[in-house]
Length: 221
Image 1 (cartoon, rainbow, N blue to C red):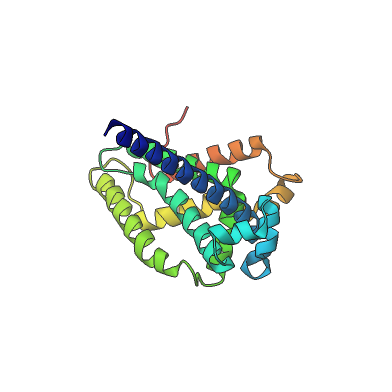
Image 2 (cartoon, one colour):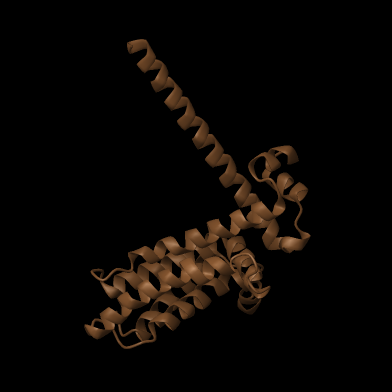
């Protein structure tokens, strides 16, 4: 019985290790696909190009994701999930200024570190959101409504200035994602070949201050 228990333990450990390897490989492929879809769009991207970007044989790519459509859906789902996680800090008991500032900074960080993700998502929306429309109309809508209710509660308690809570999220999304989606435009106006870390830092402070002032939460220093 002891030996059997040991076998089970080793078997479980091996399964866990295999699962971790699979997750790591899938994340690597999704990152490569994110870059290719951002540059070529869904129509122009190929599994061969994504495999090359990932440094993997095309057969390996098909092992994890059976088709370009399946891979594209997985890329979009990961992007949306990563964007929604920072919203979870907006709760009734949270400090409004801290919660909104943390959310804005997280979105700005995503725009800086993963601009390709934002561009893939923007391109999907520009084409009418054929793949993610259901997610937008269900999961995203439900989450925004829940967080907007939290903000409305803060407003009712006079913890922040009156704003349209739903449109506040649209404003934050537009302000933060523009540094990824329209990075070329921002860079050109600033006289850069590409945005630098200090440009992103400057932009972050600007967006934070702008939104918090509109919400009556900015503290002048």
